[in-house]
Length: 133
Image 1 (cartoon, one colour):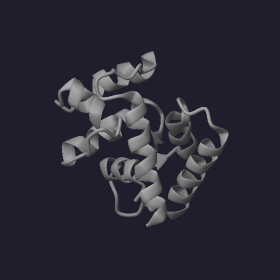
Image 2 (cartoon, helix red, strand yellow):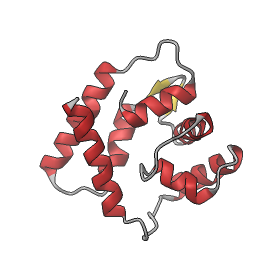
Image 3 (tube, rainbow, N blue to C red):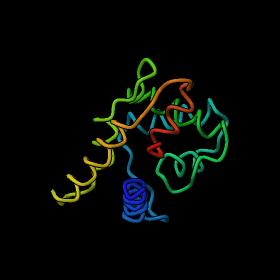
Image 4 (cartoon, helix red, strand yellow):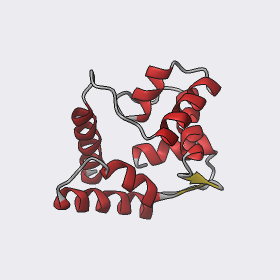
């Protein structure tokens, strides 16, 4: 439970750093994936951006499948498996403090160790990876 709480704190912290009114500067490949998946899943771009930035939760299957589409497009979800190192790298991109980076890495390592793929489709895998379930 403490791991989930710390993970949630990190996500909120990263979202706060990004600022609700300041658009995140997404790398070109990620921005293109965001735009393509938003259109493919018929989710408004700004809503998709907030879901993928942990500013809003995924509330339904379409939101979960948006995550899956994005993770596949950015090679984070390949052949029904999560590339945890890629997720870690994307989450620490704006964090300079080495101690904080190590704590975040430990959280993702624990998520990876406890993660199960059995009985899940790609949409559920993506959602569970985003929420560390």
